[in-house]
Image (cartoon, rainbow, N blue to C red; front, side, top):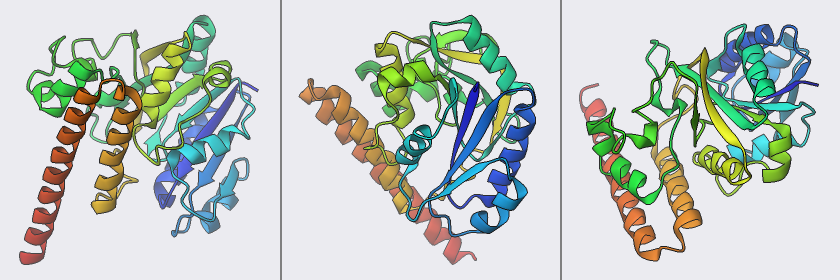
Length: 290
């Protein structure tokens, strides 16, 4: 079997329906399977989608196990030579999977690839390719220099802003929204680190693939639409999970440099509190002017 497509869903029935329709079109001529792990959605996913997509393997969890754990759950069932971790709030083109598989076949040193991603308005999503957040890269991102100098080889390395978005090149970090990985590579690295409930797990796996001797590639010869945030409700729980993942990542990779680790953790906490302040302020303003 060539390809296993793994999708983790949570309360995104309509987006998932749209995603699966595009996935099935892209699977034409490819031997593969589609596995959907639903993390105990409260919407109509369970009743509506299995009858519409009889060729898709649905697994319905009795609790929200988080993205990383659900991906690993599907990985244990997958049989493909290549594994695609795909977000449910995406749509892919008909030639997407064929082009990606051909590239991986021609480049055996490639452990994984990500593609050119745009939002629903066609705007390029910078997280299509990223650098590993080293101390310096993290500093520039955390304190806004990456945004101020988006094309700088020094300040914008986090998003590889100095590299053209329309050319294939090596990258360090791929986005979990679309991450096609060689199964052989996953056998060496293992799947996602399940300590990451959501967010940060893609950076961690990308880096472990490089440490295992593989290369990660940004492959812009196909484009997907990522309805970014379409499956995410931004509330206090979101900010706790997002910044919590950042803190977990820092503790995992910078424990040997405690001074810098605590500096980064403090910076993350400041960013979190600022984000929460803006969130609650907007909530108050919306109520007042409703």
